Image 1 (cartoon, one colour):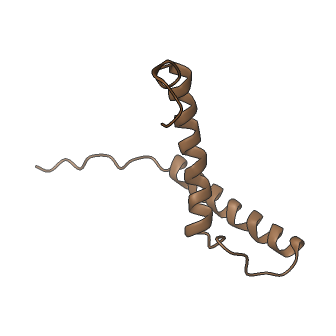
Image 2 (cartoon, rainbow, N blue to C red; image 1 turned 180 degrees about the vertical axis):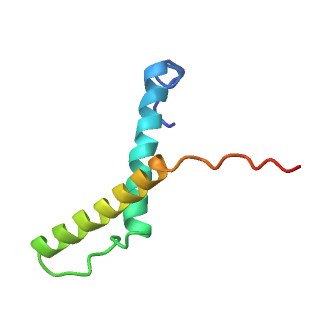
Length: 78
């Protein structure tokens, strides 16, 4: 990174913060691309806010579904 030396980028805290930042950026990226919130389709703050909440709830449901599904057991073939 420009303006950062090895003392900052080499620390454990910096690596943790970059991992958390990536996680947050992935959420906003999904909301903009898959959720369709790159531009608002609605006029007014209330309707736009409702649409953003709806999209973020949809993302949470998808994430919960992935957490609750256990991987399939291996099929044993004779």
